[in-house]
Length: 312
Image 1 (cartoon, helix red, strand yellow):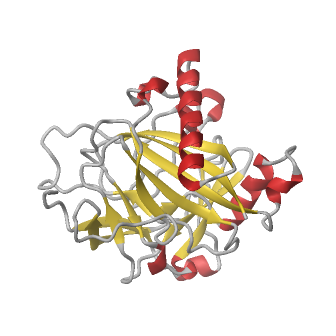
Image 2 (cartoon, rainbow, N blue to C red; image 1 turned 90 degrees about the vertical axis):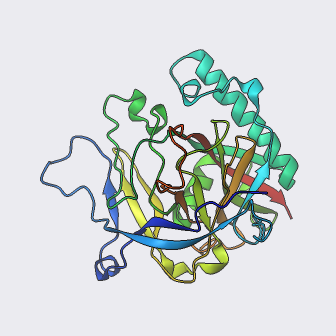
Image 3 (cartoon, one colour; image 1 turned 180 degrees about the vertical axis):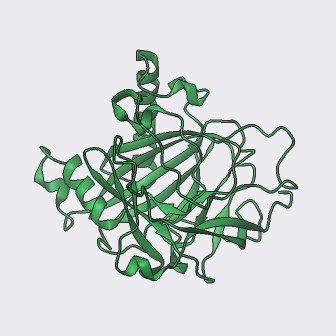
């Protein structure tokens, strides 16, 4: 039987400000900008005592991708890929690249088999290593200067303690168009395929002892709870979304999550192409002193952002 873990969490939400009705929330990640320019107008509030449901407990209903927008899926970690720590993932050398490619291919096979997908493509990925931190009072804007190709993916970024989505509906449509450019036109045909943006998140450590992921039931979220956030890079603008607090939100987590417990979450669904509420809100939870093990190992994780097609 699972031991009692935290029943509530302190989570960083976007402030519900009148400003955002006339000005889009933004973050400037571009380098070499005028130092007088404000890099973000994002204001956050830490909401304490957000109720949690631990899926390890038999009394908790088990989330599913179709109803809740996410689920924990048992999948033996593909050790044959050669990934043992976050240091084994990246562009740094041939071995790192080969390990990443093997992991991506293994994940494609997993998604195809579990969800009956005809086609799966990867459009982004992240590797993270958690650092000592607290719930965020401001967004974490990384400097990419000196990183290979100015790439966020070439560094082990901190776990994200700000509730977010991995892409707005408008941005995901652009991702779909970009990923399928040069492909057969049928892969853009939503009358023939259900197309979903999915994130597959997986620990690299044996057991998550710090900064576990928490996710919100999409059935408790409305479109208006989300605000689109523009992330201004050197040569492009990406869009994610940040969540404003509502009492109806219901949060889930898995205590002692292992690397054999992948999370599959929805980003976008062609069945609801313009709706924000079908994207699963998520972030890392900072465990309180009484809930974290002494000398807890920093969390290491890898996430793939995918497009997946199901024939109708």
